[in-house]
Length: 381
Ligand code: DGJ
Image (cartoon, rainbow, N blue to C red; front, side, top):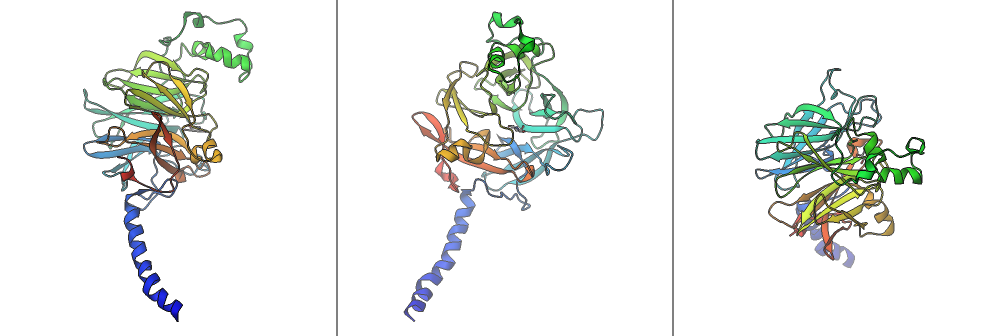
């Protein structure tokens, strides 16, 4: 009887109050790794993406994915979602669509990955770049594609795809790396000798005429308005920071090799208090690996690898909490508040890959990330 009384007077009211509290909490909480429903109740299908803040709204662009088992790699294109608060997202539809015409490179069945959009103040246009692979060629082509629109949500008009910087040497490239070396042709890919030769320009020389490879990519607009296309090049061994023209639609031909031979993918860059920080991953396909943090005082300067920015258990750190970086988002109006955005890939159903967003925290002046099952956006002040 006493138990029943306790239940009736204490537990029953809690049962009513708690869901309300939870429910209110739910509205402010980021829940990494869970299904994130959009305004139509569907999991947000924007993977390997990035966010652009424009006119009071965040716009999230990403890969619109299907089941991997379906033959066509990209049957749709790049999706766009909008939000005022980073919590409730409206599906704005496809910003860039593949074109059903076998004469175009952007035909269904090609691969579109890691799209990013930036705004050009001079032209008033929105510019999208994305990693582009050709239909039926797996990841061989290593191209980057560009599209442009007058409206942020699109439709974006596809311009073309290319390998950047054909015919020009990197800016930070010693003269002795320009000449082919004896034995170059007989090096076994992946061997220690090959890796040394790659650091000394083997693949830059190989790709000089046709342009440098461009796979995983991001865009970064520096304080002076200059934009850079940052991409894994040289068979994913070295990052290239390639300057874009003033309209952001092409390459100037000025580019820099960063962390040569470091095998970095998934670059995500941000600037805080006089320093540039870059999150990258190693190269293990869809499988997560330990994240890497690099820092530099100059965007195109000497980047220094700091180590793994994850602060979890040993097992969590080995796989970046199951994710791979895609973008670092600065919260509008809060200069030093950033969100690490990553993808927890599900290669058997890429559309169900989950979003891992974690608050960027600081430790001795360097960014670190910790796992939170859920976290309040207001934590980022
Ligand atoms: C790792 C890259 O970061 C992804 O974007 C994707 O290209 C996979 N590799 C494919 O295996």
